[in-house]
Amino acid sequence: MISLMKILNVSNTIDPVTGGGEAERSYQMSKFLALSGADCRVLTIDTGLSEERKNFLGTGRVIALPCLFRRFYVPKINFSAINVIVNEADIIHLMGHWTILNALVYFAIRKQNKPYVVCPAGSLPIFGRSKLFKRIYNFVVGKKIVRNASMCIAVTPDEIKSFAEYGVPQDKIRVIPNGIAQTDFLAKDNDLFRKKYGLGTQPFILFVGRLNLIKGPDLLLKAFCKVSSKFPGVNLVFAGPDGGMLAELKRLVKHEDVDGRVYFLGYLGGADKSQAYHAAQFLAIPSRQEAMSIVVLEAGVSGIPVLLTDQCGFNQVADVGAGWVVPATIEGLVQGLEVVLSNIGAIEHAAERIKEYVLTKFSWNVIVQQYWALYTEIIMSRQ
Image (cartoon, rainbow, N blue to C red; front, side, top):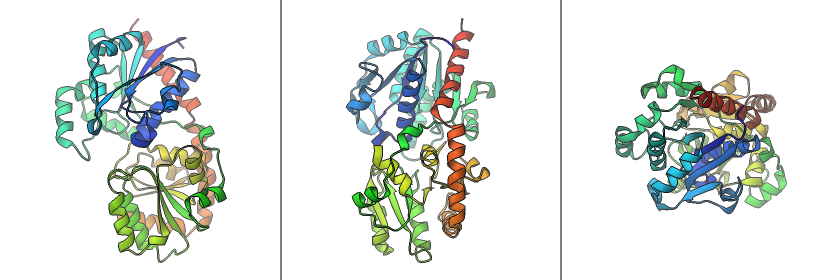
């Protein structure tokens, strides 16, 4: 292991509200690399950057460029500052893919011949909005960023095929999964949480994530409406910021006459988020596309089983008896909800299995050692 390794993590955002899983992953990975002895810095954009996140590595170690255009996270370009930051690093880690920040840093990396890794975390496929922009981005610089990396990091084996479509050979891909910190999910007060958000005493299914098309909240809500009469004692709770679908979801709730059984809590963080997991019967993840769902890990360390689609990159939870995997369709989720809600004993068994599984395989203390090994291998190969 190289002592005092200087690592620069580049992430469009580390704001948990707007940045979702990628922001949280960047934040946690940087924190645990620093705790394990690395000289770690983060280059990001200042959108939604709280004082806590601005200083979580110590004063001046999070470098935040001003945002000029929030829709596409266009930073104020400062080539001289970026060149200095890149020059000081032993290795650079690029998070995500469709970002102008990554492109700017990439140009500095190539100019200085610095080693770097790239972890798109499931974002390589052209999916969702801005498809024309994504095609142009790939043509100009995106594919070069991926192909020229010292190593590409897949968060699940399923992501390897996405790298292959970009022309990356198998020997330049390393699988390192997302991690989780159990200490972030110890807060547990069911009565306090229910009272604070007016949830009553009924058991509830929990959704955690942005309310946008990719996360599939509409699929879950429509499936819930289809089974609601069969399971009248169970409610549905959405915890997450609006990603463009909140109004549509609320209209559906009124149309299906499930007003008193569906709750929209908005973004939850800290103790509230932890308490939401502990209070839930199980977590539902209806994503249309996702590389490796971080909320699976969050639920897991909280001892809450998961019902997820086969597009979440986490099918192994079913293999170890820690949850249920269904097709990413309304029908698939209907079948899954019926299976889970009809067998409370299975929920209790899965809760025990998922906590053991996640703590053994995905603790950040375990995952960060894989990063140390990879970075050391790359740096030593260049000497």
